[in-house]
Image (cartoon, rainbow over all chains, first blue to last red):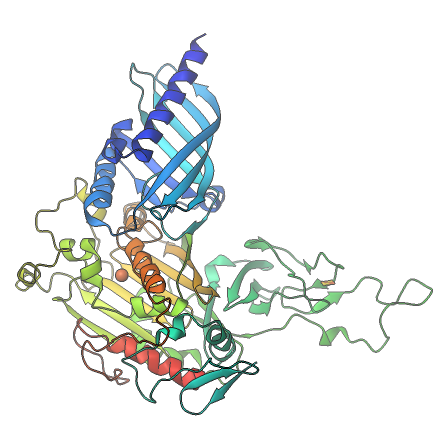
Amino acid sequence: MERDTLKAQAEELLYRYAAAIDDGELSQWPEFFVAEGVYKLIPRENYQRGLPVCLIYCKNRAMMVDRVTAILQANQYSPHVYRHHYSNLRLTAVSPDEVTLVANYVVHRTHEEGDTIVFSTGRIIARMTRTAEPRFIEKVVIYDTCRIPDLLVFPI
Amino acid sequence: MATVTPHGSIAAAGETGSTLDWPAGDVSHIPYRVFTDPQIFQAEQERIFRGPTWNYVGLEAEVPHEGDYKTTHIGEVPVILSRDRDGRLHVLINRCAHRGALVLREAFGSKKRFNCIYHQWGYDPNGDLKAVPFKAGAGCGGGLDERFAMAEHGLKRLRVATFNGLVFASFSERTPPLEEYLGGVMPAVARVFDGRPLVVLGYLRQLVKANWKLYFENTKDPYHASLLHLFHATFGLYRSTMKGEIYAEPSGVGVLIAHGGTDEAKKDQYEREEISSYRKSYRLQEPALLDIAWEYGDRVTNSIQTLFPSLVNHQIGNTIATRHVIPRAVDRFELTWTFVGYADDPPELREKRLLQANLVGPAGYISLEDVEALEIVQKAIQGGERETSFVEMGGQTPPFAAQPVPNLLSEAAIRGFWHTWRTLMGV
Ligand code: FES
Ligand SMILES: [Fe+2]
C-alpha cells in the first residue's frame, strides 16, 4: 500500500512542521522546504480571483531564513504562540518524484496574558518530494480568515 | 445626539461628564479621551465622515464594466461603488429605501439590477428604483398609494470625485472640489497615480484594536519610522537623517517623502545615538527583496500620502497600495490594503511588487510593527482619559499650508492633523 505510506509521510511532514512553529523551534521552519522551495500565505479571496498578492511570499528557502531572522531579531510584536491542527488530508496527485497533498487547518493563537482565539482557518495545497526525508517543494496556505486579527508574525 | 459647547468640549444630550478640556488652539497635547470616548466616535461619524470630507471608496479599476459594484464603508455607513449603463460611477448608500436592508452583500460583483432580497425592491446600478412587487396590490386592495413616486425612493447618491483612478465620495455639499482638497499634496499623489491604467494585484485585510486616528498619527509621523522599524533604518529605506519632507494641507491631507541614498555621511548618527533599530551587521540572505527599480525618475524610497479621513497611499520601493481606514468602533478599525500595479508592468517589475509586498500589510516587516505600536497605545491610555500625549518634536505649531517641513524629525504633520480634526469637530 504505497499510497498509505505516502499519506503517512505527508502527515508526518505536516505535524513536524507544526511542532517546529508551535513549540519554539521556528529557526527550523525553512528546513522543511527544498532550497528552491516556495511558500505562499494567501487570502482565499485573492486565490479565488487569481490575484497574486500574498500575506507572506518566499520564493526560495533563503527568503524563509530572512523571515525567521526578522521574526527572531528584528520585528516588534507582543509575545504569543500558535497551535496548529490539521484535518481532511488527501493526496491529490502522485508522480514518481513528488506528491501533491491537500489538508484543512486551524491555528489557535494564544497571547501571553492567556487568551486564545481562533486565529486562522483555511486549507493547504502542497507538493512534497518523494525522498527518504520528504520536504515541501511548494506550500500554498490559503486562509479563509481574511480579516487578520491584529497582525500576523509567524508563518502557518 | 451630541452637542458642542464653545470651549473645546463635546457633550451628549442627557449625558454628563463627557467634556473634553482642551485649551483652544493646542495641537501638541492631545487628550487621550479622543481615542477612548464612544460619544466622540459618534460625533466624528457625523462631523467628519459624513461631513465636508472626501472619503475613499475604491479604484475605478475595481469596477471596470457596467453593472460592476463593490461594497465598502464610509465611516460606519455601508456604501456601494457602482458603474451604470453609461459608464458613470456612483456611490450609493447600501440601505434599501423600503425598510433599510443591505441591498448588496457581496464584496464585489456585477449585476444589471440591484435587488434587495427582503421584499424584492429593485434598483438600477445608478440607484434609481425600478421595481416594487405588488405596487398596485393584487386586485383586492393593499399595495402602495397611487401617488407613490418611484423617483423619490431610490438609493441615496453621494457626491463622487475621481483622481487618476482613485474614487472618493462625500456626503456634504460643502466639501471643496477634490483638486482643492488635495491641494499641494496632489503632485505626490499624481507621481504614483499618474493616470496610467491600474491593475489590482490583491487585497490584505486586518482588524486593528485601536482608534482610527492613531493610524493617521502614525502615517504622518516621520519620527517613528526609523526608530520602530529596523528594516527601514538598517537597509536605508527610510532614516530620519535622509533628505525628506512632510507637507500638510488644511483639509487634513498630507504627504511624507524620503529620498534614498541621501544620508550615507550621516547614518553613523544612528550608531552614536545607540539606536537599536539600526544594525550594521544585519544582512539578508536573499537581497532580491530590496532590489528596488527606480520607476519615477527619482530616488524616493517612501512616499506616504495621507488622504484624511479614510485613505493612506504608499509607494515603498516598488510596492504600491491604497490603505483604506474604516472605523468600526472607538477602539477598532479595519485596514484594507489594495495592492496595485500598472497594466503595462513588465513581468520582472510585477515580481518585485509581489516580493516587496512582504514589507507591508498585516505581516509586513515594516507595517506589522505599526499595528503593534497602535495597539499598545490603545491599551496604555485606558484609565488615562484625563491625560494627554506630548507632540512637540519640531515645535508646537501645525505646518503652514504651502510650506513643506524640510526634515524628518518633526511631528508638525500630526499637529496639522489635530488642527483639522478640531476644526471639523468644532472643539
Ligand atoms: S427592505 Fe428592501 S425590499 Fe423591503
Ligand atoms: Fe511605521
